Image (cartoon, rainbow, N blue to C red; front, side):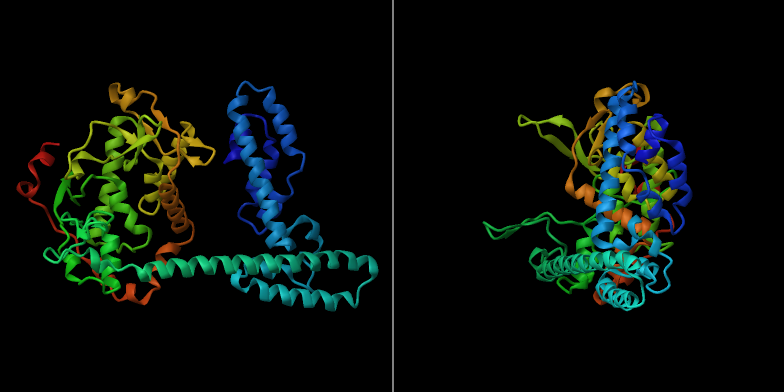
Length: 439
């Protein structure tokens, strides 16, 4: 995408972009990127210095150059057999380096050992001139093995730490004994449980309730005591949430599967459609959730609020329009085409910075007819929103891999029947809160 922007600005050779795009879905995609000339971006920066859009294009050039440099460094450290230096050995049947392209990371050190032994065997039958390339590859493989082993060890340490944290968490201390629901918190100084509880199924807190039940920290009845109040959106029943955010409806699906024709699946899809319709009427990209907005405190910090759709929220909302890109990432598996189109629109509008999409775009101060004024960009990045975006991307690009990890746990498998609850057939208008009917 960075290179496409540079091509559109006429500061990057379109022929090179076409070559990369042509090879993108072949087994030569990496080689096509690595083969870009070292001096390429010197030419690009020279062209940018003469461009009227130089300030805009300079950042994209720097980012593209940085990513190319990082790709080359990663190949050198972990997969030297893929570098251009050893392109002549790619089709060598004696060592078969192509096999390493599909090896899992944890198996890589073992296969590198095998490849080193193959090279040692080949060296016995080659001329001195032919041996030079094999010896260089062997030396690089020894370093790559150490790098792979170190990375595997680091990942296992992180995984073990995460598992221990999950196991050590005792949700029972948060259980309100009278209501059988999880309290919003425990005051460690007074040793008292907060009286307020997380009591809605249509919220992110159902993730904690599900995990607590799977761990047998709280009884299963807690799940069925979560509120299931509905509203109507264009005639479709939708679970109510506290604030009508995408976050409440979609965040749990980063880990927990949503099964077809169930209460949660219907509400998830309806919430996304509602968000799309609401934003279209306002003339803005869609995706509303809790986020930072364009109001600063005395220390210069952005303020934070749970923005959502008024007609899906039990709590009264501010009269504001704040769009957060991470909300669209959460919708990638609900409406893939719509989410990608929305993200591309945000890029075109300049909502993208040095660390990815900005936190939000606040249209509130630019209120005009249909909210079509230029928004104030909230130029910060919040770690938990970036983290959710990465998990959503991982699911989208790798067949819901995060969900597979979560559901591979036997205790989750024993509890997942809770996620199969059937949707309501209809909702009577008299059962919908009066304020929401008016909205």
